[in-house]
Length: 158
Image 1 (cartoon, rainbow, N blue to C red):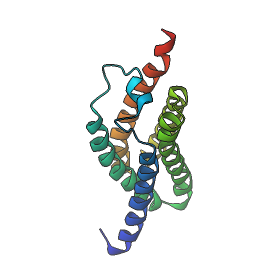
Image 2: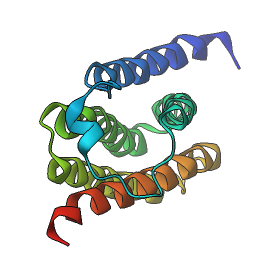
Image 3: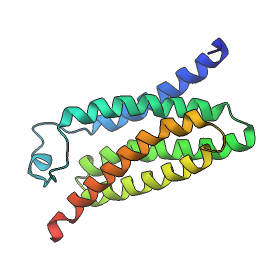
Image 4: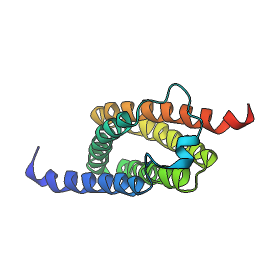
C-alpha cells in the first residue's frame, strides 16, 4: 500500500471505531435486568461471540470505506453516501434496542441496515471486488442479527 493511502485508511478505521464506541456506550451489561429478562431465541450466540465478530466486521467496514474513497468521484459519491448511512444506522442499533429497550426499534434498525448494505453491495460490486467481498460477511451477520431481532420482537405476540 502506498504511504499516501495510509492516512485515508487510518481515517476510516477511526470512523468505524467511533461507531463501535458509540454503540458500546449502550452495550449489554450482565446485570441489565431488562436484557436478562428478555426472550432470546436459541440461535442467539454467547455474548463473547458478538465482540469477536463485530471487531472483525468493523475492520472490514473501514477497509470498504477507504476503498470507496479511492474510486472515481462519480461512483465515490453514491458509494460514500451509502457507506456513511450504513455506519450511522449501525451505530444506532444499541441506543435503539438497549437504550430505549425496544425490540421493535432494534428490528427496524437492522432492517434498514440490511437494505442499505444490499444497496451498497450492488453498487460496489461493479467497481471494487475486494470491497465487495469484504461486505459479504457483514451482510450475512446483519441478516442473522435481523432474524434474531425479528424473533425477539414478535415473541410477545405469539
